[in-house]
Length: 193
Image (cartoon, rainbow, N blue to C red; front, side, top):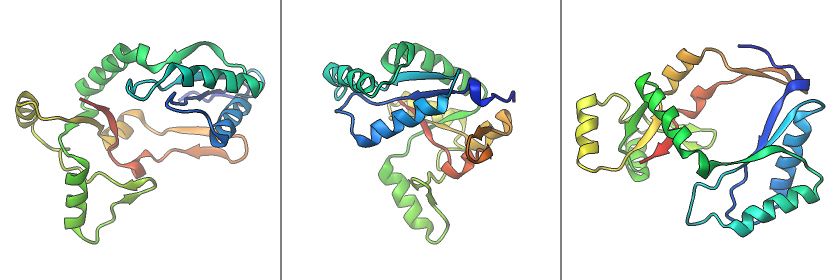
């Protein structure tokens, strides 16, 4: 992987327009802008993929608040809702490579399976880890369940993704080289159908 020098760093701030920004948002935006440093690039990406909660007044307020903080971002602003075809194409590519798989488990299914397993470690940094229930379903079973209209999510097969991508790292201004360990998050949901 090519190393990016700090002067060429790229950062982004990606709020959801579902409410007004708060102090934590301001801190995150200022940190992201500062991290881009001299000669770096700072992007604003609006996470507006929840059509029932995303509101134009919050989107406008985000831009006003960031401008009030003195932040300048690269144009154009990226709106997630305008990129759904791009994300769909990327997911299809990951499916063809065997890096994502359909998962039919509900949150309560996952919790029941974790509780039934007893003492095994099931907690990640952000809560319970998916136990891999649907990871090894056959293609035929997955297609049958999809065909019957059963809801599903697409999960990242993390160990496969890590094997394909190789080491992932970045250079932190204060801590030097940091090696990513995505395995600690388990097979995360990338999309819901």
